[in-house]
Image 1: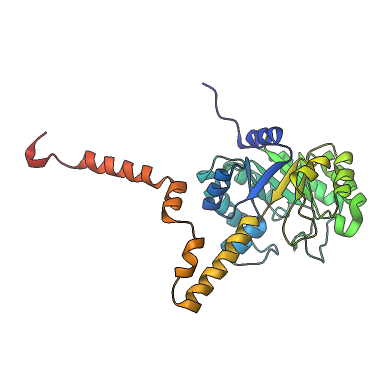
Image 2 (image 1 turned 90 degrees about the vertical axis):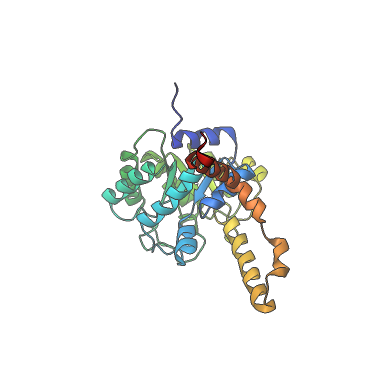
Length: 301
């Protein structure tokens, strides 16, 4: 009897099946279920998503490995799709990076990305980012790669160097990171398709483009990214932003109007929610359990 592929192998298989692989950000398990229903082959847990949605904090390196593990475990328990997780700068030195890899793999995560910013990191599309030397980032990656529990687990290197060192600098760093063992490269905040073409032509491993709204990278289509040789297209917080805008409008309507009546037409119905959750199947199991436990009526067998 054959065993299931590892999460890392599942991520690599999704990448082989779809180019570029569209990776949907999910801030919680229910969002992951919705992304799965939409047909995505892979999911993403954003560090900003953990900070913003789970803790009400900005994405400034204030969350911990345990914070990320909590959200990652909930997603991998709910959905079988491979999950890519943002681990910021690895939360410390070589031993803490290695521990993060082991714990996340144990939680069912398929892939992580580790970045080359200083520990007091910033959002990749904000000004003022500071980077560690390429050699220090190489050491981070070596620690991560050495801790991989199995060969197919994916360690991706993110470089934020384009903003301060230009595309050529980011490419040079990425080549160093591949030499240190990075399986894939996350090229953050590139601004043109030509930049991506130069990047993918110079890098020997798959390259990810972060297609985040309101940032420095235009909202390129999959066709455009494919033409530039991009292997993965990431949408880290698209649904979260849409959900948040809907929540603002709904809360406002209730306060303004004294009722939610005007917003009901924009809501997911109870039946739709139950369909996503498989609610009726749970109820049927519960009914069967109660039926089995109920004593026969009037002493009859």
